[in-house]
Amino acid sequence: MRKLIFGCGYLGLRVADRWIADGTPVCAVTRDQQRVSSLQSRDIEPLVGDIMAPDTLRRLPAADTVLFAVGYDRRCGHPIRELYVGGLRNVLEHLPRGVSRFIYVSSTGVFGQSDGNWVDEASPCEPTREGGRACWQAELLLQQHPLGRRAVVLRMAGLYGPGRIPRGKELQAGLPIDAPSEGYLNLIHV
Image (tube, rainbow, N blue to C red):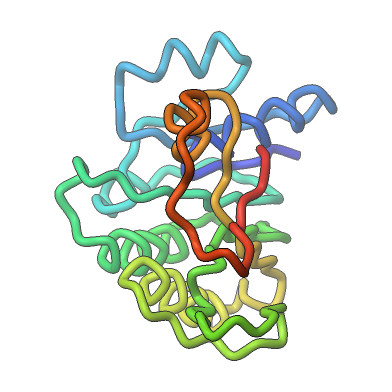
């Protein structure tokens, strides 16, 4: 059965490609009419809609799995909390029946610990930054929704890969990166 993606960008496109390679039809919601042809060229069925405009979500297609991998775009004109929490609420309110799994891409920023201790999925969520607080609020919203029992929350660290290596120019120039001598940089290669 069809997969439905909200946030078919850096991560979402890679997930779509994997699903398509397995023979599964994929539909992606995009707010950018200009992305329609590029999605179609990858065998992704585009649906022009905006998670911040509920009227555009009234005709979502049936899907067994939904991936919500919306990243924050400062050009969208909405504060991050409004986008992550309000946008997720709009999607949840307009999903057709039959969704068996909801995958929400969150952030390790929900933890917020900076005292040097190890952090894992059992660590308390104490976000200190606005993005982490917005993700945490969205996770709580999803937990309270009937789909929350069938949801998977993926708390991703910073994703890097082609064109997205943090401080890549400095590294290539051989410059040192200002960072604590003890500790780790939490990144995942896409």
